[in-house]
Image 1 (tube, one colour):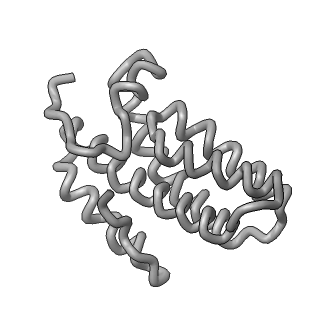
Image 2 (spheres, helix red, strand yellow; image 1 turned 120 degrees about the horizontal axis):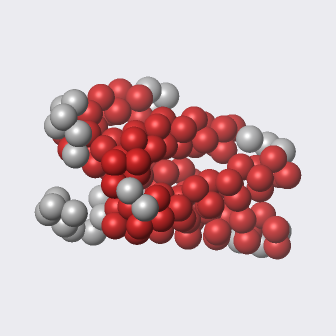
Length: 143
């Protein structure tokens, strides 16, 4: 990894690359993951069926772990626990999960673009701003 380490990263790209076994494969998947993650966020925000919500969050937890998105994985695990135990503030935990997912989207697109010849990370991340703000959504805050 010749890239300079980012302060307080949302994605542990070293872990993700290790899970994939190949940096170029990880980066290819990372680009698509950002798009899929946005779609999952929209489904999770609008889902009322608790069983389907649990399934969606469990899938998200697994993919986050494999991609190296530890905070997203932890947010998903906390929401799953609340859904299964019927304890905890499910609404707040759902919002935290979605916020973490959006932060992963931005960083994933930035990382994937920053390591490819197709553009700078800042340019590609800037493309996501209208998508994230589209329905009155706020950009993820920095931790």
